Image: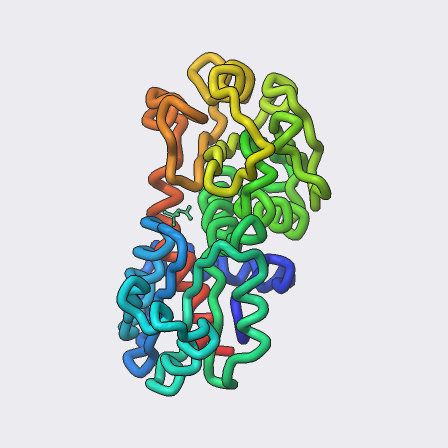
Length: 297
Ligand code: CP
């Protein structure tokens, strides 16, 4: 794997390799070490989980890590991102983890970098968040391994969600039995890659094995999109009552950050069905597997 950009670049075998390798990092002591490899985190959008977990993953693999402080980088003096990457590459940084608001930017950069540089997509605009989808599936498979028998519901602001895109792609690749995409009409995907679209939370959650709740991404809305939060909550919020439409043992997941009292209630986010912190924990192991696969290409 030269770069890690999209789920669509992976074969089914490669996706399973990453999931199984992440599980072995979780259950066994780390048997590999890459002290000669340097990684740079370049986050042009806010992040807690993804940035810190790539840093921890690299450090557990004995890599050297630089978190570029973009407020003080030479891009403030007009340097292009491409030149920043070439500059870091000239210093020996080979892994560039990039989060950016522009759809497709990591993919464009990957087409022009030097041979020894690997681009890692840590979330680009509304397009893709492939490491999040993989860690989500790792979490599901740990508890409900027969994906073909599962009904998974993704609920919320699907139109603005790079996580939802990557989850659809991975659901198709790994053969999820049924995927429901539950959203108000304004936030339904224009071209769903996989799954059935509905604006009925009851229909979407009926008998679901896994419920993945999404944050309302106000930062990606344009001026024409108005939000009536009260109406949204009545129809789509994950509450103790609405969650009863799913199976009693349904896994409740959320990629984070969660907005309590908006798309999800605290007693659900902190309840016995919540796997939100399991997802966060698995993020470190999944990112170890991704970094290892890049170094081994
Ligand atoms: N899920 C996710 O990408 O979270 P962060 O924005 O905190 O990285």
